[in-house]
Image 1 (spheres, one colour):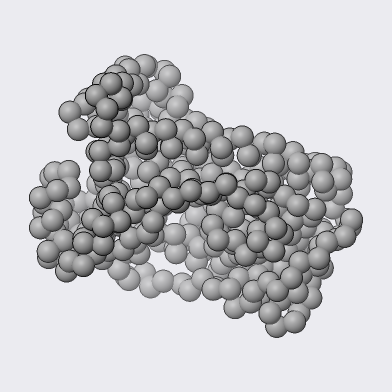
Image 2 (tube, helix red, strand yellow; image 1 turned 120 degrees about the vertical axis):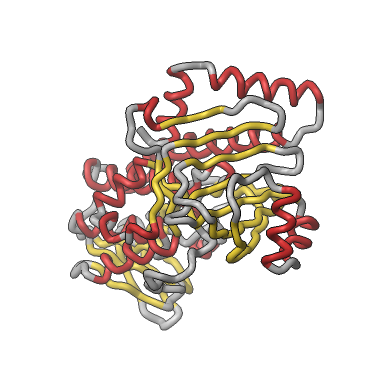
Length: 386
């Protein structure tokens, strides 16, 4: 049961900052501990490589937090279409008009979302920001959780919320185990500037070497996503921007416009899932609890669903003992996150199979999904959080 309504949030990234802001707006006293505080990017700075596709539900949460309006229009791209296919198969096409929606979602840079959330936190009287700080220790009792920071400051609260990412130091201090494996692939992100107007369709092509994807960005910018073996990605990273463009023209799915490569980067693909979502009065949200193959762009949206679930429980079920409240959170979110992880794994692994029967099955699934009518739209609405 929440009495003094004081909460510690570890991690001020998108999930942590949104959690802290929404709770602060409900009157909770919040401490945010962040090792690397957000820096406000310049309005005309080049697009960052780290972008996310935000579902309609995620947009609604950012509106609820009062920050959606603060994202500059020239850093935000709405998309109305989503297409996916395997080489030689029919396209599976989702269109917002079929759902009676204005858009399927929005693509924006992670740093802009974090920046506007952080700016809003700075304006809250009931939020204390502990910047450039790390946890040294966590101690728990039946009624409180106490943390010590690396500047020896001690903070006591009724709840600790860990949102400090896939390599969560908080999760390690709590001694919560994870199930994890390496996909033995890497993902390369390539920002390009095109010679055409802003696009409104995002797409993915599945290959035996891994998926390739196109994400439209605001104005005439876009992000290309290229999955491949670590050896191939290392070779691509060694190229200069002109050489990389030539490689894209040779090996990437055909693009219907001219472009220049602006920036590139890569990261390995790993999956992690916490074996439990809470311990005592400490609870895991977002990547601290689960990471997912990014091919469907659901990572941040799953994290925001965690936020919504915990917020609803803290606001509407505050009479519950804390262990029961956090158990409800775990029972609500863990199966959904595991289902999405497993579905993406099956989709990803089957897309790389060279077996003829699997390839035929993949094409049949895509064909059936495209002609499934309302079922296809229900799947899309689930992914959008509707």
